[in-house]
Length: 387
Ligand code: MG
Image 1 (cartoon, rainbow, N blue to C red):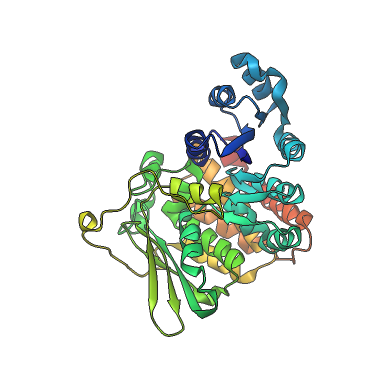
Image 2: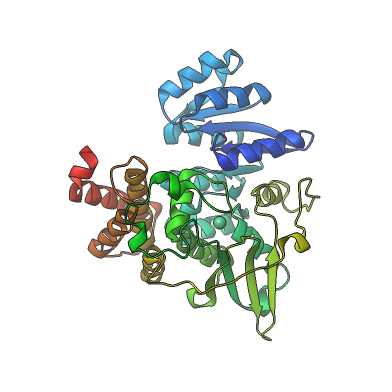
């Protein structure tokens, strides 16, 4: 039996992970769960897993969970980052699913590796902001970072046994809900339109990032660290059907395309059972049903957020941490209705313009760049902040 902690168990990835460990309950023992603020759902999940301890975002979340699920009353590990740290260190499970949102996922990835756990990583910010530190730590610990992201899961399939012969890796992007529209058209789009993704059902933050194609920029950085390809050997292509998740080109000029249903249970299941391959119990693809697959070039002028991400990647050091922090704070402002959709790009641009990238030697360098960015944007846009 594998012991598992699911961080962010009430979010989109977390709920799918719960579905899988429940279905295969003879294979997994859940030792920990965490939520940011969905005490109600966490209380329900804790009733299903009597051995699981838990953490919540705030102290009142702990109180609320104890009230809703009396059987869980004595199972709180704590709240905030220290609660998650305690949760991981107390049980040191075989695998930690990190489905936290934002830079809040970085510390937990490091604690999991230190505790001797493999990490099923759905928190892309971990690798975007501190890719070298984290991959180095995993190597030292002899532990695996298993990507829970459709494109990276797909790439790991394409590269298996083929790494040496592969010259180039290609990630696909759906293009999001506004593909084919001009930037001018997007000035006044409503939050609901942004959140209405054509092919994937995901959390809010990643859905907004996908509409800007910034998400694909973050994924290129993630791929660079996970698979150790230089940036000029990583390409992106628009593929509106979201069924080919990645492609690789071999040195001999031939290519491999990897298809799968647009279903996150596929990468989550693969990560949970890693390295074992098990049968997928849900619907698989019917090619004749699909009919056609399209591919288009990414227009950098049309997707400025993607261009900014690639510039931050090339600058390296603390620049990706600034990109990430600016995006987090701008997307939050957008979701709260304080700024428009295109202002998100403007905020990221401003922060990157004003930042002098420095080398990342320790994780504190990452957190310092993160704090600098938040302070910079709060001060630059105090009006949008006071709302
Ligand atoms: Mg993805």
